[in-house]
Image 1: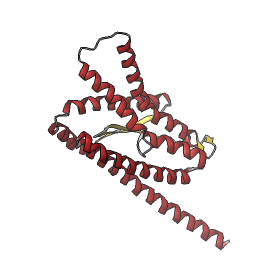
Image 2: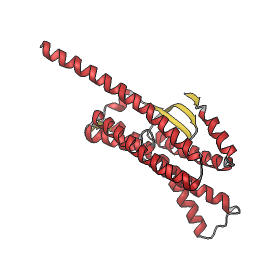
Image 3: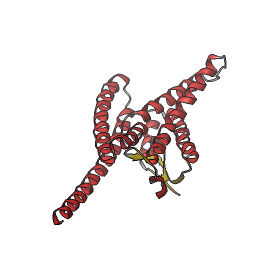
Image 4: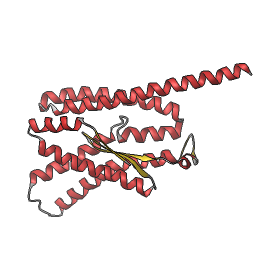
Length: 229
């Protein structure tokens, strides 16, 4: 198992420190880590082993080791592995929603929190983390769930194409909405979050283009074989 640290995390720390939002960022990071523990728990239950842990500006990212035997059980045009990956992906946002619901219930039954400000930050942090990760943008959790479901329904090739188009469209819409929000909220942190999302998207676009080129080469080779026959 390897541990990696995305150096952009130090830029985010500096940004939130300068904008006097360091306390908020730390709380968000704590629950982002708890969010990842939700993924970890689901992975352990489904008998996966952690291969890589990466600390990023938006929390922690886990990568599980996939055994060859996981590809053997077919489910429509995909396999059982796609179902397991979707479950692991959705487990993170569900963890934050559970925390959110429990805190609201405790508040409603009369439990008094000594620091209302911290309580509100925790509530909003878990809500934002859940919503943020449920966005249908790959490689966010929502995008991963959609991608795995599409693999089962239409196969890998079409699934990647649809996910690519959906992710890019949603990110453009989110960028436009965030641009308006920045004017009203006057929070420059939103800019860096959107920039980080675009960095992730550009990485996925490069992977998608490589995948398309490989598929094209394979298709040309197969056509060549058929012509020879």
